[in-house]
Length: 285
Ligand SMILES: Nc1ncnc2c1ncn2[C@@H]1O[C@H](COP(=O)(O)OP(=O)(O)OP(=O)(O)O)[C@@H](O)[C@H]1O
Image (cartoon, rainbow, N blue to C red; front, side, top):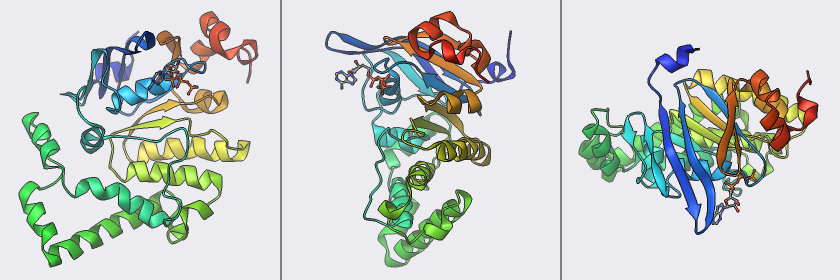
């Protein structure tokens, strides 16, 4: 059956990617595509290779085999900061905020990529895509005093506007470490959004959350997908979250994709039940 999303061009094409660490094949011929606006879950047992898939997409590792095409551009060998600039942002399993800085400063720092990425804009231009920074003009504006202050003000305005949209505006001046856990996770996502991504990769955003916090997180993820026109790929062990918000789920085991489908299909899939879910999810509400 052809779904609506399959008729569009993929925003991300993970083309037969393998990632080996010496003799260990962490990701084995992973082949899949994400379509604009999708919210997709990536699940599987510990050590299945999920985070390695994120690391390959974001340029932390160069794959042993295969290619990653994002928005029509081959990003396989680009560096992490270049990939961020082109439009992919991520969060990590463990919270990585600047804990002594304010909420506002955490978001401001994430905007630093807007200061100088002339080389990446060249890549974008080569693919007939709009550069994200106005190249040299921007450079001269930022090295003059007036230009610097103007840019700083623009960045502040953008940061405040983002904090408003994600519900953290009242906490803008608070130290990041003073925020409750759920809000710190939200700030991490806000910081990723400050890079203005088209694709957002979330690595276990519900880890360590209580049921109320994960309920709120589910709503928040749906909200940002719509508000910021995002495509989202989500690694998560909390099946309530995954089944509750993902339209499609990819299941990995020992580096390979063992199943793919909507939540209903996945929870009834014998291979997935055996490798990961266990019986209790098959008929759960
Ligand atoms: N830099 C590395 N060097 C060597 N082995 C690695 C490296 N990174 C990951 N691995 C190994 O690759 C395999 C897949 O790890 P990965 O972290 O991708 O799994 P995961 O599915 O994300 O697991 P979890 O759910 O526990 O986070 C594991 O056996 C891991 O030990």
